Image (cartoon, rainbow, N blue to C red; front, side, top):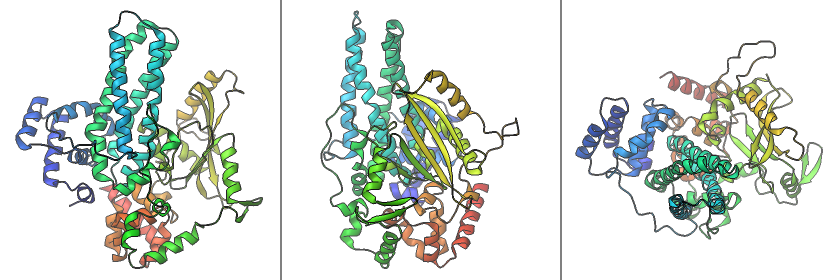
Length: 522
């Protein structure tokens, strides 16, 4: 049984048969009615986790995200009346899934009101403005999904549901933004014609969340993980509901170490390893302790205050494309929360822009460009963004610093600047002396791996390596323990794992690279 099958506790043979029927339908070997009949004849029901497991397997079988996205509604229709729905209403207050559901309950009422307004002969703008104020707040719902829930699912190796659903979320946000622009321009005819599409997309995303996302998340994630997810939700905010109370980690220690470790005690050697990690990363320093920085001496409290009062947002991604840091300024340009820390950079963006992200990072990694900058409009403001390549004194690439600043008060002809610079950022990276596009490689490929990558970051990008490590040495059995891994995975790097397993860091790095090349060749 595979790791994913164990996590979901699914019948692998049943799932393989579900995948076969889906593939035959998508490939045209079965009609919709034929596929429906076969599903109903073979299965009394299909659980959401079996459905989600099948989606991940379709990716592994080579079905592209684009095709999956285009056919998702048809595939869900195939399972109408077969997909079993668990009861979700009994969750405690503050549980992230209950909060998502509460927001959708309000959204269902808003959609009902929209239908009633459309049925009226008379168009009253203020009524629609009130509706759209609430629709725009619904974007907080998406932001929490992307920054809080999706990282936990991706850590389990299930990135297909997050990538596909992000595209559907963007479709909802885009159509709401389009409707607001038409309303502001008083284009009553075009606005009214658009509303059925707005309603359809909102109802569609709520259906996908209720039938697939929430049940799958509840099956896949532990209560402690949901409690950790709860941290940072207030930073993003909530959509048309009061701030929920409770369901935070039960103790401060739980924020760093799962409750199961606290209750059952550490495994042999765990305490020493964990203490060494705390010392290495200086966790536990007081806010008043003086630290030597490049030019001066500051306390940790002063450093955090400086970051919090900067007139711009900063985000730092390391050489392995893992998000390590962001500033929590008072007026943030883009939504950020603690859930993005330790997450792969590409997974913090819609999949449609991954090629652009990879081109930008590749040009900074190679030193071909020192920085890439552009300007865009966001929430009625002109925002200037720079991606800066960070290299150490020896010239080694250490990551990317992203800066975002609201330059609306200083911008001249902001819209034309934004259009021109977005076009430049999206175009293929070229060398200074060549007119032809430079050949770019995927960001942070196997040749770019270093021993400083965290084990969580490594398995985030290459989940199959977990089995490889266990085969290398019995010492690495602990990596498959989700409790220990949650506590240490984001602190322990490959070099530390090498020494723990009796390998030289560079030796283990080469073994890892060889295994990745072998897997990619397959």
